[in-house]
Image (cartoon, rainbow, N blue to C red; front, side, top):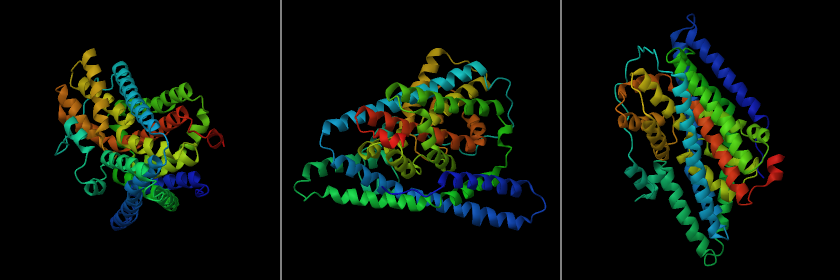
Length: 416
């Protein structure tokens, strides 16, 4: 087993704190020269954070490809792949439906948009949403190299499954060629550890970049919306996932959340489920005991279709904008919001603030003012960081549930 860096969680938290402090000092201080602030902003925070995120993204496609191919090619029972796929997709869509329903209920009770008056101007250009047709078509790429270059994860997962199946069926003709993918997968896991070693510095730059740009006053606008959204995110992360874990596995919840700390912090700092895939895969396999055949399928798929945090935002934002506009949504319309949020989550890219793109589809469906997205975007940065932490926590929870149901969860590793 490849060893992780020592005291990583402590060092990441220290890096996050240092980023907050230095960013706040630079944002609020009037005595420091502007040239110094600009230099630190550009050549420390922006450059450092961009390098760190690029290093994480560098591994996404090869890691997903090699881990998925090596996992599927080593399966002796192809029926188990179908079972894993059905369970994974069903659980992801179910938790997304629960997430958006929870946000609609809380939004309807506490009414974040009542009496709201905003001075925020709408964005110059509204994002365009991707339809269901395009989302389905993207699963079947005409050019896999182009799909890999553009980080189209559904296409990469689909091709990896096909390649793994073909390798499985021809392994006896290729002198056990699948063993080469096993070795390559191990190499890329070592690369993950090497990059993770720089995580405290990367998180320092990411947090500093956020604070020096927006300060700590971002919550002044739409305070009630922000507060309720954070509340629902925490409820979903610690209540919904706890319930399904207990219901399906009876595993220790304290152990699960303790071992997910580093992944959640990574997701918070990067705001990207895709960029966090290497860290999530490493933690799920080595710390939670999920068999690599399960992890290599469930985690990449989760980074693509499991957008519980985004669904919570879309539900709360829809209620918020409707109430702010004086529009009462009916029960049928609430049900439609749930369906749309679940369906659009499948096509939401695993990158920062991608949820605001699919929010357009929902707002258009009910004739709600699209310019109100300007309000959502104004407070979306820190919320997007929290949403991503919720998403990756859900990925890991589903991985544990699926692995346990298939008898592929090593409980000795989980409880270690």
